[in-house]
Image 1 (cartoon, rainbow, N blue to C red):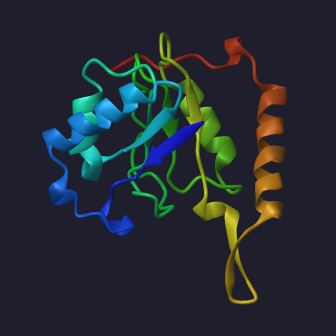
Image 2 (cartoon, helix red, strand yellow; image 1 turned 90 degrees about the vertical axis):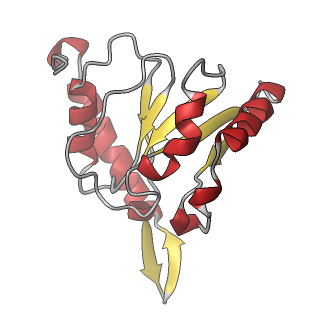
Length: 165
């Protein structure tokens, strides 16, 4: 079981209301529901929330790096390193057209000691069908096909971590 919290303006949230007290209440909720994973969207807009949770993080905290704030815009610049103590996911414009490149890039990061990484996507798995926004199973299967191709070629020795700058 999991809950994902995306408190961004594009989702109708007044981000000016995110305060240390609010972050403390989220932490209390996380601690009271220890069997539930809480995924917090990590970007500049949500910093007032996640920066208070990563210091002495609850064990059921995960971060989702998404500079697009859920809009599906592709990441500009380099993907940040995963947190050493917190499972970290990556999102933002990932889809069939670039999932291989994203996987290669993420696995080339220096992830030694990280709690694990994953990718997340939604916008790029949707299509307009008869003027309706719909989940596109074909796009999802294309991502799986590319991931399968990636895994067939993958070995731990083939991805040398990049040194930290």
